[in-house]
Length: 236
Image (cartoon, rainbow, N blue to C red; front, side, top):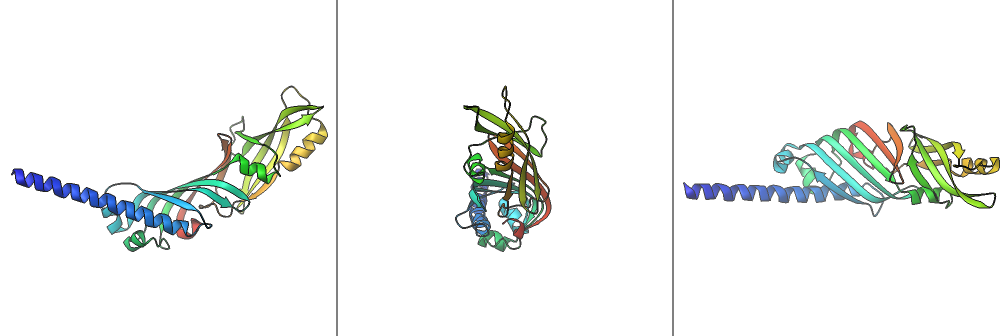
């Protein structure tokens, strides 16, 4: 009886080890496959959730998979990070082991892309900017702060910008300019409305942005989106 118990424990340990090894290998291969669809130099991490991996892999069905990428270049934007949570994923065993993700599908995806303030600053021509969520809490407004000179003094001006995404282009349009305790001259306000109103191409964000919201977090611009019926072509 004791030998049987020991044998079962050893077998269980071997199966768990094999499961972990298979998961590691598949995550590495899928990461390489997805990275191959992104701009050169992109690095992707894959997390296949749930247990056991081997059972999921044999069936080609995965309840949840997370893909994450850092330091992406999205058109004129650099340093972009993205995370995509895929639900009810189908990927044949051969694809999981070879890194061929052409047949990958998912019922749903929840994506988040973070555009660093430094990249937004570059898009404005190098003007220093800070980003914060709108006081109203609206998912389609952000507050852009920047230093300007008013009457010989440098003051921080806040510009409220409406945010929308159409045809893979993020549009920021400044609607209001204010500075605490200081009147903003019309010429300065007009200049900011021009320089801080941006059209940023999102082609290259590795998830669909058709139904997306825009806000700011920790000083960066954040895009969140959900989509259904995802295919591999959507992850590029």
